[in-house]
Amino acid sequence: MNTTSTTPTAFARDAYPYLRHNADRAYLDSAATSQRPDAVLAAEDAFARTEYAAVHRGSSMATGEATWAFEGARERIARFVGAGEREIVFAENATDALNVIALGLSDAATFGAPHLALGPGDEIVVTEAEHHANLIPWQRLARRTGATLRAVPVDERGLWSVDDLAAIVSERTRLVAFAHVSNVTGYIAPVADVVQIAGEAGALTVLDACQSAPHLPLDLGALGVDFAAFSSHKMLGPTGIGALYGRAELLDQLPPARTGGSTITTVTIDDAQFLPAPQRFEAGTQPVTQAVGFGAAAEYLSEIGMERVRAHEAEMAGQLVDAVAAVPGVELVGPEVGAERAGLVSFVVDGVHAHDVGQFLDDRGITVRTGHHCAQPLHRRLGVAATTRASAYVYTSADDVARFAAALAEVRTFFGADR
Image (cartoon, rainbow, N blue to C red; front, top):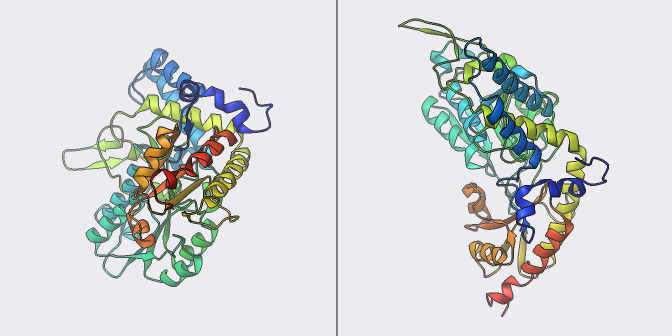
């Protein structure tokens, strides 16, 4: 990898097989799933071919080598997000990780962790901007425990404020769950402020880091959140694996959501004793090949440097915003022009459904995302069923954005919406 270039794109773009194979396309859907570089694919392939074996089972050399690769991946990922190795649990994806937290809390009262249990009179706070993965688990937790779910409202641009959150959090609040970066608006949450407000109320904090771990310098330990979740496939890694972060002392107390092999110390017919974290949460055979790829992706991004990733994406975000703002009849969602945002833009084209916008762009070789982006409450507040989203990553170029801008300028004319 050529690390002497001045921008991530200059040395990263040619390293992606998908982009080489589809050189005539502009891939602007990395917020959904990012592309994998050769280095990550090679790491997965090498493990599958030469080190593939069960982990944490038996005493053979094969098991030892596979376990070393598996735990080495955990170490890389932990270092990437500012966590201790015992604070990273492998999960199927971020959605699974969030469910592990919610299911664990729902069992706290009967699993010897009453201080983590919720009940009638307690409150869970989310925002109207949350991805369904960071909403539905808390809906279910509220139903199971009798707690009340409360939501911080968003404004007409889809943004929420710290003041509105502070007005909802009270001495009854036991948990505050929120996204670090909105997958619809690109809004970057003031994590430190939320952690302080929640901490003063004695509430746990759960951070959806799916859109921040791949794109921003991230130090979960320094941020002070209690739990967090993020996915491999959004940060240059494979699908089928994600990570749950939790402060070590909390993970050791949280009941495991799934039980079985590899999670226990002692089992009798009537009872079982569980290992400390992270093994207490990793029941059954793990996706070891995917974990190796996940670790390789974290290492790859670390070598690029997350400050450089953020700087490049901020530049791309500015160009995307300018492209949207320049077209009459196209409304930008989220922070206003010139305000800080992550490297994505969502927008509404007057008189043209988002799905038609996406198809038009796709026909011109530009891949974007359309729909409600698993955030129906947010779209309902915006008064639209769907938006179109273009998102950048390390391999996004100014040429990609220019192609997007030129095609977007033609949409309303093509559909006769400018008459």
